[in-house]
Length: 175
Image (tube, rainbow, N blue to C red; front, side, top):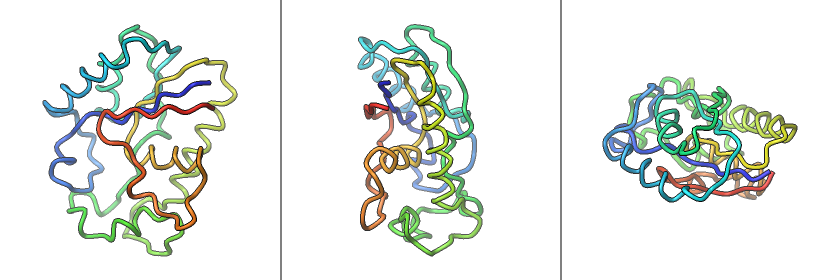
């Protein structure tokens, strides 16, 4: 099965460089990015789109859905929950440690990275049992880090900070 993993378009908390657990929709730039991505994906054949339930991902999914295929919502594709870091600048944490699979540091009530990655592994293991030939998945930067770990293994140093997708970037995988 071919997977096209897409990160949603830009939202305001991306610009503000803050952690956010809000269900924020795309901003003007994010909408433009999604329409540009729609053009890039013009010749892609897909059976279904699977999306995070968050507005920014769903809005992106709806814009890029040229073929009017079903959009399935799956909660396991939600971004890593920052807990009580929500609304705070990214600099309040050591970002290398926050996205380090082997880090023992716990940042407040944020979702544990191993539990987050396990949720994504569960999603992908279940997806393997489906009979799709090609799927577009619309999700988040954290999800793209977990996909990287699933398909390429955990880096020896455990660092995932720089392994995520940019807004409306696409990465192809074979499942």
